[in-house]
Each structure stands twice: as structure tokens, then as C-alpha cells.
Length: 343
Image (cartoon, rainbow, N blue to C red; front, side):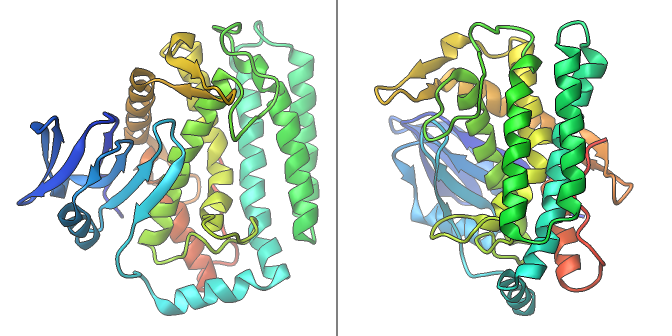
């Protein structure tokens, strides 16, 4: 089993990263502000402008340390990769199946069953724990709709049909999402999902968390030898990590949606940490981003019993376990890909 390492998030815009022996050195204004041994790191995520030295890039590639760059508001820019890792036969199988509609439908069904079941679990948790704060009948109606959608997904025969069902389920789920915000409702109103750019504070928070999750899933897929850009549900486009987007569907409600709700309902973030750009989009300030990243790291360290493996693992290893289960399916070791169902 993979060991969950540390992730270095560089949020200071003026920081520059370099290599000194076996250490990564973070400098600001030519002064060393941090020094960390590379062997403790699993990933480095940079929100900084000056960048990273070529020597450090090479060291990260050699040691299989993920290195990626995001814009200040969280939009993904680039990842540093070395030689392609993994079994070429596995990737050939992935490419082959990605060209077959029936094979894509079979795998896409698993991804979507996980997603919609986990969205329903978010709703059901709110009904169980906060019945006095929500419109019970409205949420039950959404839960029933998602339950019915699961049946249609299982019977799906075409990708376009599945995408349509997923879109309807997402609309119903996000239509009720605002009810799950119990604190700071005036500062975090939510009516619908908006992207590129996010139009309100909660959408900005969700978009940032989705970016982090996409990066985690893409790294996990590469680590097991799969190509994160060749998907089964999402159509292939240049620069789009389609397989990472496929797999993150089942993980979004558990990793990102629940965390966004917790951060707002526990008042760990507030409206002062969000700013509106001239374009109308909303972004987070540096301190709020640090708060979110700290919460993300703490969440990854928590342990759960994996529903398929029946083993206790850190939460942060779920993408790696799911990536490995997908490879076992593609190789023919499993009859079906087992999605992650949140208990």
C-alpha cells in the first residue's frame, strides 16, 4: 500500500523554490523562509509567480514527487512530468477500451453510480443530523429523485444518455445544496453551480476544492501507470485530464462538497476572505486559501474503512486505491470497477 506523504503548498506569491542537496528551499526576497527534506514530500503545489528551479524540477521527477502550478485563485496551469511510467500494455488496453462505446458505458456507469449515491448520502446525512434546519420534504424529494436516477444509470446503454442523466442529477442535487448551508447564509448564498468564473463565494470555494481533487486524482492515476488524459465518460480534449475528471466524479461529494459545507457551517472561512474580480468572478484571498489547504491536509490524514477493501486507510489514499482498482479491472482481474461508496 502506498504511504501517504506530505504535500507542500506554496501560497506566497513572491516565493521561489530551489534545490539544496536533498532539500527543497523556499526563498522570499532572497531570504530562506523554509527548508524541507525531499524524502518527506509526496507532492508540491505552487501558487507562486517566480517559479521553481530546473534542478528542483529534475529532482522531483527522479523521486516521483508531484509538482504542479496553479493560478492564485486555484485554476490549474501545468504539471511537471518525466518519462512515462507504468506498463505499456496497461495503457494500450486503456486506449483500446476508450475507443469502444460499450466498454466506455460500462466503466462510466460505475463512476456515476458512485457519484450519485454519494450525492444522495450528503443529502441523507443532512436529513439525519439537521432535520430542524432544513426543508425535510424538499430534501426527501431530491433524495428520492437521486435514488430513481441510480436505477436509470444502471440501465444506461449510451454515453450521451448517461451524461444527460448525470446532468439532471447534478441539477437536482445542487438545487438543494443551498439548504445544507446552516451558517452565514447571507454571505454564502447558493442557487446553482457556476464555473469559469464562479459567481458567488460558495461556488468559488467548491471550484478551488475541485481543482485540488483533480490534481490528487491525476497524480494517483499516473502513479499506477494510467494516462489521466484518456477517459471513458468525459470526452477527450487537448489539455483536459478526462480520466481524472471521470474518477473524481464519485469523490466530489465526499472530498469537496462536504468540506465546503463544513468550512462554512463551522465559520472557518467567512465572506471577508472572498473578493470579486472585474470580470465578476469570485476569488479567495491568501489567508482563506491557507485555511482551506490546512483543512484539506487534515482531512487527508483521517482514517476510514474502505468499503471495498474492508481495510483502514488514510482518507488521502482513496484516489490511489480507486486508481489501482481501475487498473485491476482493465487487466481483467476484476469483473467490474468498484466505485467508492461513502458509508
